[in-house]
Length: 109
Image 1 (cartoon, one colour):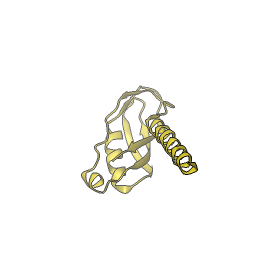
Image 2 (tube, rainbow, N blue to C red; image 1 turned 180 degrees about the horizontal axis):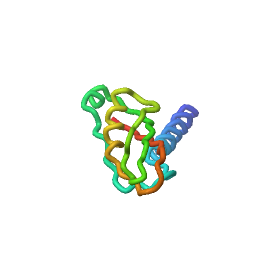
Image 3 (cartoon, rainbow, N blue to C red; image 1 turned 120 degrees about the vertical axis):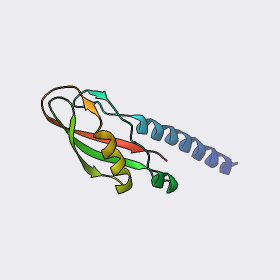
Image 4 (cartoon, rainbow, N blue to C red; image 1 turned 60 degrees about the vertical axis):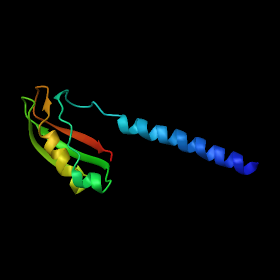
C-alpha cells in the first residue's frame, strides 16, 4: 500500500514539474526595444535528426533605423547558433538610438 502512495506522489510531482517546464519555455522577455518584425529561426535538419534542442543567446547590434547591423553569439550549440544568427539578422526593431539587444531563442526538437 505504501508503494502505491510513493508511486502516485512521484507521478504527481513529475506531472507538475513537466507543466512548469513548458511554461518556462514559453516565457519571453520584452526588455529593450520594441520588436516590429520577427523571423522565426529555421530548425536545422541535422539538429532534428540528432534530436538536438537548447537555448541560443545572441547579441544584436541595432542601428538607429531599427535594422540589425550585426549579430554575435554568446552561447549555445554551434549547429543552432547559425540558425539563430540568420533569423535575428532579419529582425526589425522600432527606430531609436543605436543599441545592443540580447536575444534568447529556444529550440525544441
